Amino acid sequence: SQDSGLGGISPWWQTPAYRGRDRGNQQWVDFLHDVTVADIALAARENFRSVEHLKRYTATGMAVDQGKTSNINALAIMGQLTDREIPDVGTTRFRPPFHPVRIGTLAGETVGNISHRYRRLPVQWHAENGAAFEDHSGWLRPAYYLQSGEAESAAIWREVLAARNAAALFDSSSLGKIEIQGADAAEFLNRIYINNVKTLKPGKLRYGMMLNENGIIMDDGVFGCIAADHYFVTTSSAGALDIPFWMEEWLQTEWQDLEVFVTAQTAQWATLTLSGPHSREILQKFLSAEDLSSAQFPHMSFRELEVGGLPIRLSRVSFTGEMSWELNVPALYADGVWRRLLQLGAAEGITALGMEALDVLRIEKGFLEVGVDTDGDTTPLDVGWGGAIAKKPDDFLGRRSLARAHNLEDTRPGLVGFRATDPDAAISVGSQIVNAQGRVEGHITSSVLSPTLGQSIGMAQLEGGMARLGERLAAEAAGRRTMIEVTGAAHFDSKGERMHA
Image (cartoon, rainbow, N blue to C red; front, top):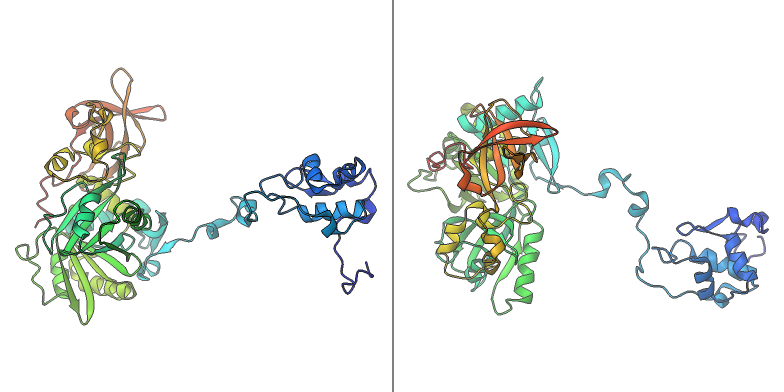
């Protein structure tokens, strides 16, 4: 209206021409509970003048938004119908949730990529050289690198064979990186990991698992001893964000007497992994002053060094089954170091390695992946860690739960390997493992056609686990059965000679 006193602008709570009883039912006020102007008018005629009575009579403002999208209009219309100003009408009592509905909730699944911000690797080279990016635990990572005219499967096999026969460079910067410092750092980590931390010497690494209070595997990774009061921890990519907070929770709520400082450094450091039989030759060109021989730099050891003023933490640790070196460098320098290593390794046939090829390599070697080969009921006893646990004298998170009768049953699913009796048979992950009588006794967790072995292989969770080596069973999916033989998890270099070369 022109006499509103607002410069010709006034609120339009309802369409004037529709104020009649017959037309008000076409003007919605509360879209969540289908309340119309006609409903509010009926409440006024029934003499429900209190806003609390209006709310309950019409149900306006009682949906999940608690009136955030409707109450102002509803109260204003009630004021018009009862000749009162809005302040005289008043407001209803609000209950949780007090915050407005998010636009993303209203939009549903139509928001596209903006609904999730990917974490990105610091190396720019990937995008410039045919990397096919995929989401892995919230990180946008290269799955494989396509060359001109190359199919996806051909690219993956090429990368796998390069890692086995020459050298491969992998960007593993998404691995969680945490510094643990303080007088009680060793005691703290000894309670966190299922294996012994206190016996680890400076300059050495150890692989360990973390459990929750129920003895279930939460995460795994490598930890190293820098000094008696200083350790560094690596986690899986999936645990990079959560594990530091989980550690802090234990320090602040249960172990307040420990002097320990947890510092998350995943974003500060990039991790570039050089792997393969020629990896030492390539790395020696980059670190000409270092003795990288196995005698001086054995598997599961690390050094902190500098190259031209650039700090590097160099670890000898492998997830491919080949001799491997992890270079932790400041993230801002990662792209330059990556390009330099590719340049230095050109003569040796170095190849960039994607996630798909890495998965093939670790399955060939029998390395488990937490969350893939384990689930919400898998304990370290189920994956063959009973012996290591028995040797540890100290308590750790989840140890008591491992003694539950349920966790000690012989028929629990255990991690095993398998190979298809038909070398070319493709077996789907998730396939059910059935015996001759058709009873389901497990399922396939990892499966691949191995370019190294020319064989369909993988890993599985099977009742009775390793006690059933050599048995022949069937893997079934979509009504199709494929015969498999139960094996140990490691299909390639089971003694680890190539890692220790």
